[in-house]
Image (tube, rainbow, N blue to C red):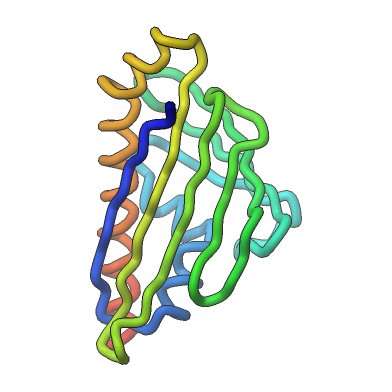
Length: 154
């Protein structure tokens, strides 16, 4: 059974602004400098679109990680989804939603489902170690996006 991580942020900026920041790989890289995470797109463009693949390289838990995801849903400015196609997890699906708060901002919701390999042992490791770690990374990214979006709004 997948572990679900959900992060909800309220941002004082339009959904289109937040959406575009969230799919920008330069913003992604800047938000996760502490893990030396970088993202390389299959197209060379820095803004993700439907069907694009992005490969992430990072250092987590003292190890080098590599994971490739594809944008499988793209509904600007409301939602996009990326799903792991190659990498360390049995399943990783990340849904990004942007809800207009009647012209006073955006509710940004990250929902990430993750399943580690190794059956029951992987489930224990996911719940005890991986899910809390990924929650911190998603929260860190959300704070970064909020800061950028609100700075551009003022």
